[in-house]
Image (tube, rainbow, N blue to C red; front, side):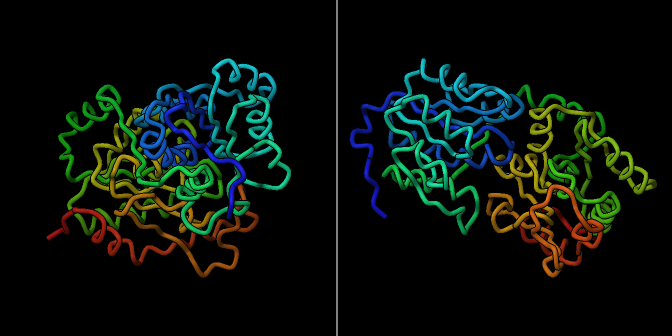
Length: 346
């Protein structure tokens, strides 16, 4: 593939904006481009445009100097007007939906980089593939670097949380005298209802872990998970598990950072765990694990591959949520043995 415009003088690039408005996991995966931008554009400051609920996590990614809010219902022309004042040399639109295409175009940046999706190519003067990618979605972001002639020297996603973000976790662990090397965190959160594993399966997962490993289970949750949390606790009555206090997203990351293993639905917390370098197991049903699995070598996933409607990409299940209610757990211990250092029960 040939590109009609290339960035010919990297030292002249002083300011770069990356756009990925929503989805904590999606935005975090898009930061795979950051080490490569730092390496190639050595004089550039890198900014990110994203929605407010994503901002706290993206601010913790190494190499990003400033994160700018975009309000969900803000008019494209208003956003573009604000961005134009920043005088960006390059904009990488890593979302490329109609709205971000408009924003990118109206900034008038010298280099505007995006995918050549139908109806949006007008916005960009450097375009990547029109496909959605065959491999992991994190690496699909690298296509825009290739289109811009930026060398890919790293495929690393680096999330660095602060000591302050770990205080609540450290206090909780001290209170209950839990050894950090034995912590398994389970996280029933999920942005789509169809992605959320059912409480009965979470209870089964916990029982398998407690019966087979020297581990302490901490249940992590947010304000959308109260019903699932309560049901999991009820189903595990008589078993020793620890329920964390409610956390914000950075406090949740602090708990994750103290874990030896994390098991989570396909969700933002799952990707946070992987970005922190924690062995992670994802639970999948409506989404493709080969595209969205935890982006870390020490990872695995649980998945009912044979189900007729698997990878439906529907927000709500039109059937009976069989991908979760019938989720196979027969290989759970095999995955745990392969990716973690949890010791077996003698």
